[in-house]
Image: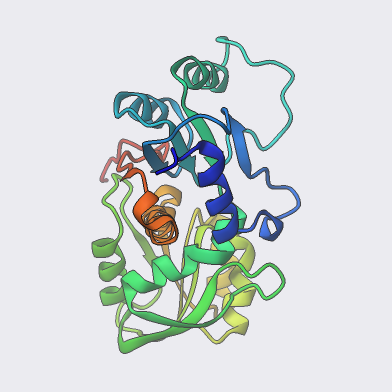
Length: 265
């Protein structure tokens, strides 16, 4: 059997999550590494950062696949004076390649991964122009309080937890979804007739303006928690495509949200 190489995994990932589907501002693909290097273990993580890079090295991975790119803007130097510089140097030193699938993976898999956990039958994208997010219905209606509790059950536990806004007893069935930062799609959630909109990173003014104008109920997770389900979906699809050639795969469970302390008042 031929030795699997980084380039082979990249080709498979690009087939599953076409780079052409990424937003124009996005920077997806291989950012660090050697396409000819052999691969026996692949890790999946939401963020490329000190913790996930150290984990990849410790677990003996030759390729780390992250949802978020290492660099979204140009850089003129890679040095130990910056965090990203240190991580990049560590990856190169230890022979670990770094690949990202971001908005192209959002279009292809983020919504289905999140919806599947919640029992939402997705009918169409939330944003018809980009294909991001989704709109669909729960198998059975439930109260907003029960829906928020279900979100808390299916997503990984993080210190910041889950926030919800609206009448706790409101019946919800039609759901709008957008993993990651989604307050730019509040109007689309309303236009879709959603009873509730599940997303992350909701800011004060967009959320309050939405609610004060009779908008749908809101459920807000953290960025990392809302996107973590995508990792397992990407790993599953990669293994299905590669079949017997599939390397060992792990999905990182390290929370990479910035919030690690919660003070209850």
